[in-house]
Image (cartoon, rainbow, N blue to C red; front, side, top):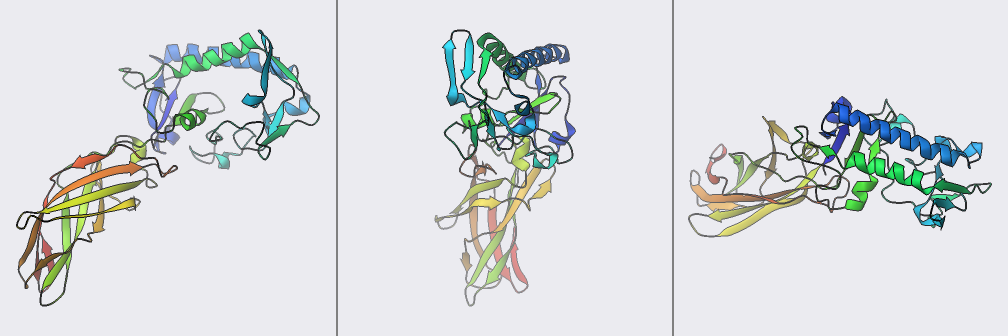
Length: 343
């Protein structure tokens, strides 16, 4: 998947940079970002003051896990949103956490990256329940709406570092938009917003895709089983996360017999990928065997075509777009007394 963060001052967050996040910015510059932050904090404070006025003191702390399920709200008048009681929850991200509970961004400084994967409803009784004693709450709807609009105004002006285009949580088509929106979080001092979109990037490739020496086996006919090396580049920083996996297929077309064979892997582990400049490469022993009649024979020549996609490390059924590279090389192997030689 791709991970993003955007600071109000357009700056960098080194911990997130090191955790495979792509950097964005809020607003056209730090001055406009500062105004948005002021408005957001002001509207949030107004909501807190209105709600705290109704809450018993023991439910006013983050540690209590006080929560307001969206399905339990009512609108008794055009100016109020209300709950017959507040709820409490033990879900981390609703209830207070320790720094070690962060999902992203290190374990020494608290952030709020641990988020529920969806809305927690009042019917999910193992996750939330009414306060004891019951604690009815009314919130001025205009105060609520002002805070909601302040959040939307902030998120809707997130853009690329150059300011060339908007890159908000909803701008890029996500494989799981609901979970993307539920993943939104900020640090305690509200310096930045961050999110995941659970959609990996598209692999790019450099040349050459090549192969190392193969394995010679068999007699009197000899077979080679080459170890292939496939280079690829990232679209987003998290595409190079060692927890990311890939699917790939290699299509071999013989240029001296016309035969076509396929090889590859699903969910291939790239944690041991090699590094080559701005690229990574994977190596694997091909299952495609090519045959010759004796030592020193050219076994067979293959044109290789590769199809590849990144898989999301959290939702493994979610993948990015496929890339096609090809033809990207020729395997020409021969068996010698000291092993295979592939060129």
